[in-house]
Image (tube, rainbow, N blue to C red; front, side, top):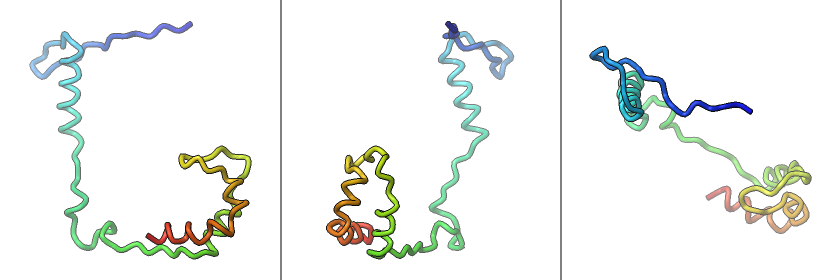
Length: 104
């Protein structure tokens, strides 16, 4: 059995002393990481930014049909709790509604 150390080692604070509590260590690390990493505002970039380009995706009933046919029946259902076997068996009934959902 492996033992786990539950304390964090002390670190030097800017005045040269060592930290005494976990809270001091957390505050020092938070301040340091806040200085060395910057949060860029991606929404205020210039108009040449790839984020501002319109993304067009073509969804057709044929593509939905192809996607349904490629579903693996031996896999567990996803977060929607619909098993892939149900989708494959009901392809004709769900193809049109799924296409409309993806077009929204």
